[in-house]
Length: 401
Image (cartoon, rainbow, N blue to C red):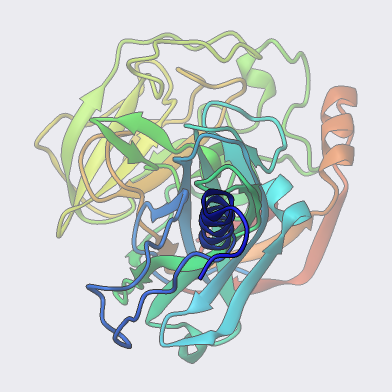
């Protein structure tokens, strides 16, 4: 029974009911653990690994798992990456690698940019370069998971800091490829290695409609003289570099898969060359079982083999030069799962034997010494350390038997 104006009372009741519905939407009655009735799990920032990492041992004795995580912002608003955790896939409570926003400033880059950032704009992708290390082989997990957290806005355009877990990844348990030395003698400085923060390690390239990192485990080899210098005279003259003209060796009994030659040496300091053949004068060896060894920047006129030739480990196949995308004489070497130099996937390899002579500790001092033509800040290892079935770490100076 209404008291007063029935019409006004009815309007007030309706208004009250509508306000209640807006403030407190009904909660649906759902069956537990039923995927058909679970709420939508919005993941506006997607994670996608590039490859299943394959363990190998570095010259520091650590076991490494190296891969990249492509992160794509599918939302309408920027996302600021706050945290990324790599988890043990069999035990998600175990955090293998925790990265905070400062870590991501170093290890993350938006696609097409080399500027430090942890901001991913709407509709843009970026890459996180990951290297997990372990003291013992038994510590390496069989599976990996990834948990990401970022500041952004939700699907209903409200401030949000979601965190979610995904991008499960199986670890490739195959052993690395074992090879012999590509060079002879001592004083070989390993640069742009797997443990660096730039160079080859970040050469994730769009080739054949895929993201390829053929150079993931590549090394640039420069030779030091007895005063630990890479250049001993006029910097514009090839013969001033102890590396120039050194013999380049077959790392295994193999078949020559391909040879590129006809390029002249680049002027010192000019990283140009042909973008279709950045290695310029090159040799690719078929190592068997779908693996290939790639040698780049070889000296003009020095290649001694032809496509289809059979070669024995230790055979001189060319001389070291400065052709292609090279600023000073050095040998570029890497191993891939395909014959294309850059359009294949880089796979880990190790040298069966080498000695560590020393290390370059401070790269800023290294560059200053290069510019001043003075001895580098070399830290000798006395006596030399013998290493087997390992890959030299960045700035390690080694000798090959």
